Image (cartoon, rainbow, N blue to C red; front, top):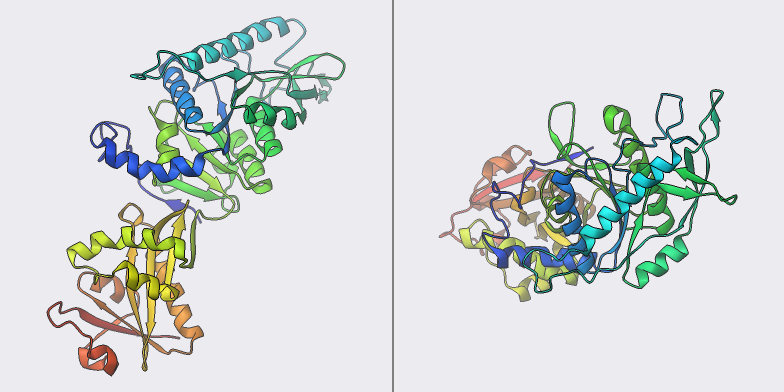
Length: 439
């Protein structure tokens, strides 16, 4: 099932929080992602839309910034000219022939040089006027002819035979950015044009990359109901649902299924899309994953700081009872959390009593409140109660009564609470009491 959230633009003028509006807060929010992405390998595919002047300069600057933050980058680019090799083409005719091979090579080489020039430029407002980034390219790709299809020789249209990932990795180890044009070379010395979308997927698989990034002509995939999709699992993805993106989606599905990589789909004309997708919780595109990125599990010691950060705003409003770090640490075995990319976005606890058990400290991150994380936590806590032989759970709430009523809880009085819980009841807070039978 696809996770769906409303698109947000943290880098746009419509943003609720941009770098310009609150740089310190933004940097603090992004810092866990900066740490998480350091020394990770990303393969970025630049299609023709990403190579347009209106998008190209901004994307190149963001690639330079990613490299400066310690990301190991492989950039696969399309040919900015008219000749485009597509393995899913239905024309039956070759794109690259003996007659136009030189033209294709000139166009592709020119695209590589344009990319090198932009990567060599300094970042806006940077202390240094030029980038220290070193980019390399080479004969990393061995190719073979696509062959004869339906009786037609595809001439210099090729497919990837092998990726020299060991040499590519050596360049990355030396902090170089690797540029790969849509070209491959055969053992017989021939040159073949390659589909850059498929090429990026082959490289991501060979390198066991952490992320594969494609640019598409929309902010997010849109489902049949017109809702924006923030995340899709490989099992839920049906590439045929988006015919214009079938090549990208088929390749993404193949790569993510075969590796631990995540694939991100973002819009090239969305200024700062790379940064927003990679360094904010809600992102701006669609990511394709093997399993849902938000993982539900019992809490661990490393989660204490995240739990505190999540519940402190709710404690300030009175929605939750205040808990100290020491209390959470001593009761950590009662907590469950939902973790997304190392960040706590949901938590809840189960406190057994002589008669029944209390579900408490149930909270989700505001940016993810439209998803089903609260329901997932509630189900986990009820399942935990059932496993302990508890047949009744209760909650005390000041602000979420209707949410619990919608999930089968019934109102009751304080006198129906276990005696030891009644003794702890805060009459000044005056929380409502609800119970539910565990079945």
